[in-house]
Structure formats: structure tokens, C-alpha cells
Image 1: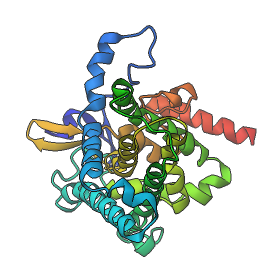
Image 2: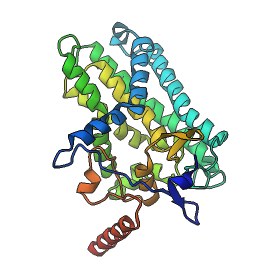
Image 3: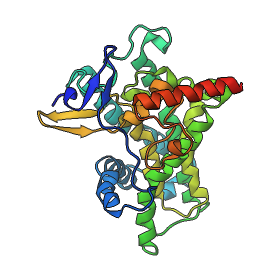
Length: 329
């Protein structure tokens, strides 16, 4: 399977898929139930299923008993930190090992033919990967763990509304299905905010050093951005939910950036098959900065005129919008 069958690569080495990003058939009118039913399995499988299984395993087997978490103690908090670091190493390191160290498919389906910078003073230690790993483990995983430990302490001490599965099984399942959509809405809101003026330089600039992102770029953010990013779990203060929902949400936030920044459109598994990573839309955000602040399930970028599908027409619309902003200033 070759990328030339599914897209084109320009002289600078940038690959563009033939198939443009499409709006999910949720916010489409008139309603298209057949398209929605065809789309729904892809919403659940494989990625959200994988994150949920990690969350379930973590909750059932790798989380201390609630009674133990009624007080903040370093022993159980350290166990959660090590567990989150281990999952991070498996997911981010797995993508990096196969695609960037072993170079399993070379630059086949890679959006940018260049490899991460290894001698660039813009990055800590002169290395893009080294800086990305530093921010991931020294800031991302600790902030993730802090939110999680705080959540368990609140549940253990009955400070949060609790959703019992036995009493509300339907809402329990519906809430699980809505978690990725809530994550997307929250991500858009905080992401749009930290692109504004001085907040960008204070909070978000570190992440955008990665114009040519790789899997470790996903969690390469300043500590302030990590706090904003994981704050979506605070919805548990408002909506009655179960700790499993919190675990799913935190695991999704902690691990999904590896896939969404992997830099490859597909992971080739055989001569005629591949796993679609579906991250071209967000790759364009790293390439152009002022487009695609969210994802495509909730078409906020389309509604606010910041969507980009990789086409020349979208380029022109983007440049017109940027010129108009400069004239206003």
C-alpha cells in the first residue's frame, strides 16, 4: 500500500490525502440516519474502545481501594503516577518505536517527509523528541495524576455527586458514549482561548514549536496548558457521574494525543491494509496555526469560519481571514 494511491506529495515533501476531512453526520440537516449509523461504529472502534479498555483495566486492577484514598498519601499517589507513566510509555513509545525508530513504513503516508529535528536550538537539548519527552513525563503525566488523585479523594470522601450503574444503567452507558464528545468540546473551548494574544505566548507557544509533529508532540505542552487541558474532568462537580467516567476521560485525554499527533495518515499493516489514524485535520492546525482549533464531530471550526480541509480554496479563505484581521488591527 503506497501513499501515492491515496494522495499527492509536493516538491517540499508535504503529502495531502485525496479524501478531504468531512463533517461527522451528527450536525447535518436534514438528518441522515443511514450515514449516522454507518459513521457510529468508527466513533466507537478502534480508538475509543482502546482508551476505554485501558481505563477499565486501570480502574479495576491498577487503582487503590477507595477507603485507602480518603487521605492523601504518597504511597497510593505514587502508584497512580507510575501507572500513568507506564501507559504513556506504551502508547507514545509504541507509535514512536514503530514509525520513527524502526521506520516501519519510512515516509509512506507521512504528512511531512522530514523527520523530527535533532539539531535545532529552538528545542530543549536541541532535539524535538527530547523536549517532547521531557514535557510529557515531567509535566503532562504529573498534572494528569494530580487531577486523578484529586478526583479519587473527592469521591472517596463523598464530595461529588455519584452515578450508580445499578440504578441508572442507561444513563451510565450514554455518559460513556458522550465522554469523547465532551472532551472534544472542552478541548475546542480551551484551545481557542489559549490562542488569544498573550495567552498564546504564555501558555501555548511550547506546543506549537512542533510544526512537524510526532507522537511525543501530543503532550509536549507547558504546565499551565496541561492544567487547562486536563481540567475537563471538573465536569464531575456538576454532572452526576461514576469514577469510571472520570477514568475514561482522563485516560482519553492522556493517551489520545499520541495518535492525533503521530504525523502519519495511516499505519500500514500489510501490503493491502492499514489503520487510519484520522489526524490530518489536526496536523493542518500545526501547519497553519490559525485553523482547525477543534475536531470534526462538533463542527465549531466550520461555524466560526476557521475550518481547513487542505485544499487550495481553504488556503485562500485562510489568507483572506488573516489579512482582514491585520487590517482591523
